[in-house]
Image (cartoon, rainbow, N blue to C red):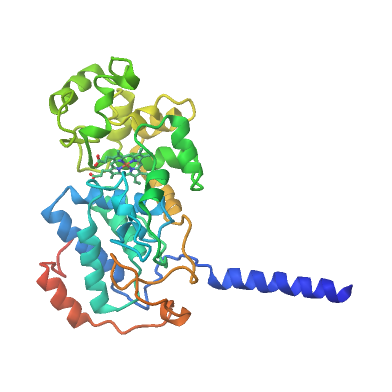
Length: 363
Ligand code: HEM
């Protein structure tokens, strides 16, 4: 009997050991020794791209969200194909022809591979780029815990079923977030990301003319705003024109998104829903009054979202190229980023110079 209990106990201990030895825990400054320039390189790559195209910050912020909601924060959204041959996340409905900023991530990764090959995961690049996108848009700066690994699975079908649709009710949104371990408050905080960026007519035009097949527009939409939107997105017009998600300040990360909701001028149904729901509307009002409060809550929820379903050493790797999985399964030592890798600053200087990034520029 004692033997049975002992061997049972051993199995539990071994199982626990396996679980804990493969689990990943993130920490701020993860690359401070293995790739000291990592965050700097990502920052300046994002800054250089945003300088050429101020709209790109919004694309990068959205990319982190779409990455984390499908297979966890593992850069699965960046893959062009996988050995299964099935359509990848990029080709899913929420991403195709609308998710943007892939070239920025690839560019940052190219610079990183010059300085510290095989060290910095693409999932971390996506998370850092989202933070920098917020900061460069005059939003808050926050420390990003790093040490994520990249995944090897990417399925369009999973993007379709996990990224929330813009036609959901408040209850549908809450359920989509709860499925990822995020609360109703995270939902309100993170939706504030719609303070920057734009949307295609296709995702809100039904609100302007024939809402829920009623033959009338959405009654929760401000009528003056609706008329403005109709000029850009006529009934039976092209689904492609773009409209700012935050009228008036598309490039500035601020709290005007919540003030828009108070005037019934949220662009997406899912935005306006947050001011209709009895639980979420309290936070909408609080953030409309107090931008600093919004910034604190937004950054907390971003850090929480950045920890969804992390890959382990068993099913993750540090990809060498962000759009493709590595050819062979890396051993645990290969995946480990704990060892210090010498940083080639002269190679970095050349690369940054080539891409027009000045090491002496200020933010
Ligand atoms: C709450 C559920 C959400 C829904 C239903 C939703 C839906 C959408 C849709 C339909 C668009 C327009 C895409 C297009 O037409 O090209 C969009 C854009 C955007 N979303 Fe969300 N979103 C949600 C949450 C979030 C979250 C949590 C973030 C980030 C933390 C985010 C960041 C963005 C950004 C920055 C844009 C602008 C992208 C650009 O300019 O390219 N969204 N979202």
